[in-house]
Length: 178
Image (tube, rainbow, N blue to C red; front, side, top):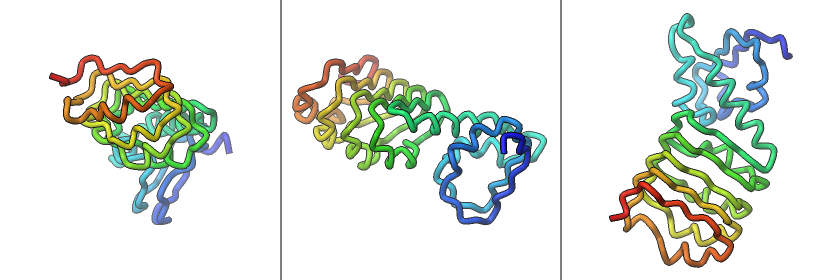
């Protein structure tokens, strides 16, 4: 399918697009209308929900390629402007490193704290206001970087962070911790 340049999957009740679509570099038309997609999120798919002459598949394909690379222990989805953690990540228990720098993530869902195999989490340059107390269950973390977010003192569970005995780097620079 590497030469596929048109794909229509309208009205199929799809919740997500396969990440392997990211490797279809010849794609000129992708129709995904009337599907309750959760992945890619609306921030990404809005680039193709426009008149056809304005479609930008490169963003969608690049996003899917990055998620596909998450089949390795490292997932890096930087600078896509997404508002939420992609729900597809929830099932990736083999991940060790999660890098979602430079997005618009405001909140970490409860399932994020169930990803107890993570050793490195980078969420710099987002809009996160609070870190949940459930972070205490992420006992393998060696690096937690939340630089340049909107964390406030009451959104930082110090009592949970001190239980992370393997943590070597905690970066909270440039937040609102006054």
